[in-house]
Image (cartoon, rainbow, N blue to C red):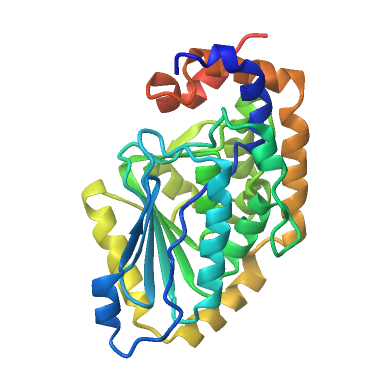
Length: 320
């Protein structure tokens, strides 16, 4: 963006909202339909410039991030995400939700760094009492419905954290990259990966991913246990759709009861989420973090090009 240098103060302080992410909410008809195929024929999809939310059936919903060129989102969409999570919570017919991307090289990149700080810091807490970002992450993990993330392209920062908050992750072997780059940029991740990754991949690998701050391709992410499977790119969509369709055919109460017991055995306590967010807010205000982010922005962060494609390499190039 040509005017990125002139907006330095806004950029540096707006990084606080980096981990926010979004989708636009589907306006659901609250009445039960005796002929659901008719409902689907008339209102299956709501589309905005940034998202498509499709009810493939009453039991199977699909959320597609579609904000090219980078799938960057802003604070206003966090409110929309809270609404859609609320709709899923309120609809016992929903058994499975798939999150994917229509942008070829990005699942979710990161937050709009030019967004004013007040747009995110002034947000009201969610139903859990936490800031909307950790609130949404907790609520997403504890949905009755099963959540599946299909990763094609980069899932960096908040993109990775959304994937970790979901129940299952599947990745393109050739095109997926998962990354917690934040330590390389001088700040602490705020969307819950410190609570989730050690339980998922083990302590040592969690430290490698979070503090090493490198990108992991689909094959290595599978080897580490970050994703359930890495599939050939040509097979990813079909596999995820078949699994979601299979789950959608099962009994909803059996799904919910089983998932609840798995949650009790595996999810971090909700109390671990807000401290990570607080540490993030503190860390991004340090001069060292601001200096690193400024260099990244000056080199082309948040613009199509080499910095976004190789973010971990650029964070490692910084010299004090």
